[in-house]
Length: 590
Image 1: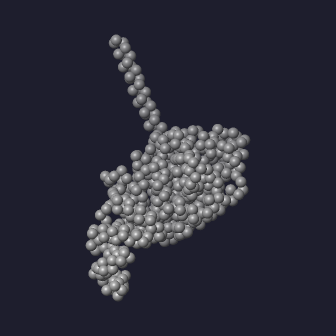
Image 2: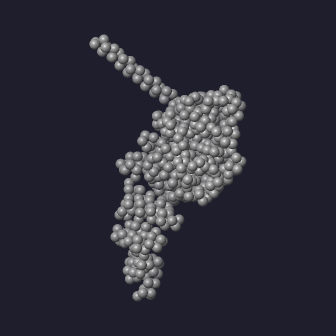
Image 3: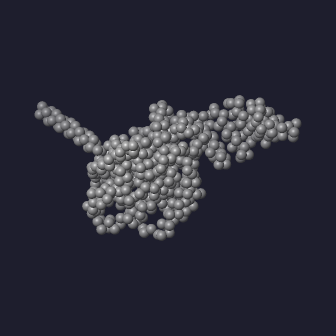
């Protein structure tokens, strides 16, 4: 018995020791650069110019480059050891890296990417998946996973990545850092391995918006210009409905920050599904697959299929010969995407070009030179490492529906962290028209601190699980109603005002606004009832008296209508509408 007890204690001791050793080992792995780098190196900037010339703009900053950017004397690995084995060292450094070094920054290494920079998970079985510093059990996002992790872990001041359909935006969102995708064609891709030529664009990560902006100024080579404030912030309501977390909480952070900085008047709401249906007619001609027997087409999901089609087609065009000759073992995600990929018909390729041009024109028309489109960066929180979710069509459809808007149109986009949900980073994205990169960089630099402030307020407030008060949600519904009213969508406006009333039933404005919509539909009894309710809540609501007067006139209650118009004149003696209406009715009926 004693012997058995002794053996038990020995086994327990060994088990505890093993756990301690394993814990130490795991901690040591996480501490060692979080698995972000594939190669450490050092590219030093040139000496500082002599005074009175200004120092280099990026002096004192360090950066890393994803392993798709050529650096002289090093093989560009493209996320796969077989690629590294079968290619020579780069003869020259990529244009982008050279510009940053010449601008005063020091390059300290090359970072991990997904295999052939194709996926968005950030997982790489060959070099190891970089550890997401903000959610260690979750994927870091890809394709530029190591670059995002290096910034999130404070290993560098900024880093470079490539964005095809989210290669910078997704890891930025999952790792809780700022990620900027430049407008297609604005920054040189010389010395950058291609994934999909018509979608690829250079992007970069930073934690500090001023560093993000400084890097952008160097890469974009923009001249000095006075900073412009946005004149409209357009919230894509239907895109936020794709979110797997609280919609209102995320939207409210943007709304509150915008109101504080620029005023409520620049806020607008848009349904991109409807907008794209009318402005991008070529989408209807693109062949798409039906899911779950659903015959109804969605322009945003169709756009996702266009982006994936273009990516696959151009990826095969660029790398088919190497894949067939080398026969590398590819990740399941890539294999699934490329498996049985039919040869693209010329008419489909031409249609994709038409879609790109129409979409770019539509977004340019919507935003003009000083508008910002607000969408979620991604629909889901970062999936768990090794999770099956990453390969599910539903996950990819939701993700690419959002990511394809900027990818296909070629617009610039920035992903901005706005706190956490269930210990995972949450982000929103701001999009500007193609070529509006400087404007977008200035905007995120101006808004960043206020966005973080509002995100912090939202996280600390003890509100409902939707993270906003009912009054806040009611105001959002009212604003949506106002937008629908402006668009002469009377029934839709009534639905939004009704939603606002259900959330906050003691607000006279909601009843008065719904009365206005009822008047437009000719529903005069409902208009009179709502106006009367508004007046009972606010005896000085002039619009409610005017609307009730109009409703009563149409119902034949002329004496009561005159009384309403007269009372409106008591409240506002110079109101022309009330004066003219009262005088007209007196002449006719009194």
